[in-house]
Image (cartoon, rainbow, N blue to C red; front, side, top):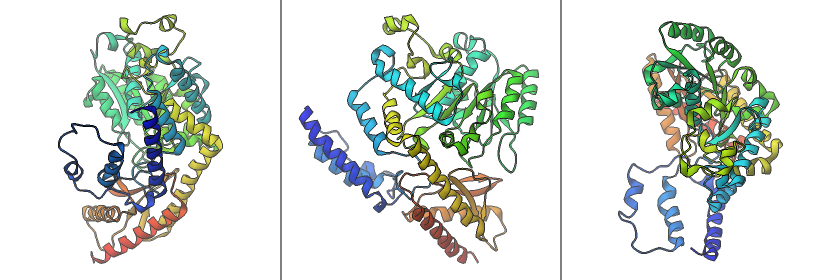
Length: 484
């Protein structure tokens, strides 16, 4: 493809994306295709001769688009938002066009140094302590997701807890990781990858009402495990759990970790970016005093398309000790001086994309003021929805709901069996999702199924939330009438 051909087809692609976003509301939110339907519509073998790019765009619309679940749809209320904004898409396009492989400072100094600036900007925006800045003892790095951030944090924690033996000798004794039933599953996966195994993951009790970690039980587990010869490696406190956005008490957990010398990782994948707003800065209580590492995902709620998760550490030495390997073919003068950051040592893979460009584009386009407005809109709409749910005798609201997620349970009069009621709730969710106008997911709390409605898509307005609530009420009433 020549530069001129690229120019022509590139304009077609931009127009396609712009038209897609402009008309996204006309699509069913959740893909309606059956398993295997897309595969069967595609050729079984690759083409022998090249095809016009117009054919690619044609098949994108004809074959692939029906198999897309539209995460940018204003009726997308599932999981958490995964925002893709114009400046982020354009930043990603620039990254692709440059084709940078930023494993070392020397392989593209701008790739590394822009990232150090952007993660420091974000640290300032959300109020992280000075020691997390890249020009201090710690620093930040863009990972693909909070899952990778958790794994990297655990490897750094193991390095420190083992005095470096984990990197040289391997896992030669029992190390333990502390989470709750509400912690993201990526923590158990990280424990498996790191060699601790599922048996090395210890479950700390939660408050039955708030679902937040119980620091007293954490202290008991740490003492018992140490007495049994285990080495506690890391505690993960979550700020905004995936299930219900529960917030673990980081100050109290941090005090326990400090007593025992245990690494504290704060997983704020969803909620952390909300601290851009001064009224939500409480989400970071205890981080400055106690956290060894902290992660949040701009690709969830901060208008930056996937993948873009940021990990900060208060001290980069355990991280570098755990992950730095320098073969001859990567040696260079800049690295040997020790004066540059080589982000290959801050992550699991060697290679890395120029992800900082899209986050840089987003922060510059919206500014702190625009980013705060986006967060506040989601929280305000969720609070209004929670008020409607709480006022309706046909539903039970799960509290607290501090941010953009509202969890609730439909009530089924005349249904005394809890399992049958839960099945009805799941059936209601299936009917709503099949309608094409919205997409919800579910969770369990207190042993009961709850529906989750997460507000935060850039295109979502009050009318979309109101329409969703009216449809939920209507479908609930219709399904209830069949169960009497």
